[in-house]
Length: 59
Image (tube, rainbow, N blue to C red; front, top):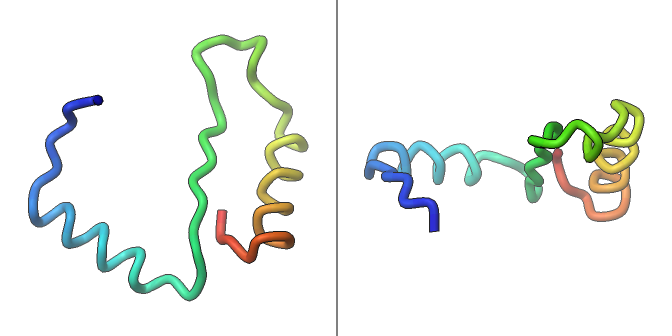
């Protein structure tokens, strides 16, 4: 557990954001703390393309 406080206003803004999307969303974190684990931009693009194409998600 990260114990990051989220205010009621932030939670409401988050809910409004996701409710306004026309399809599921996916978060893609494009960096790591270890450079050897980082992917190329093309690798990330392939994953995001697949999320959209295969699952209808908006990365």
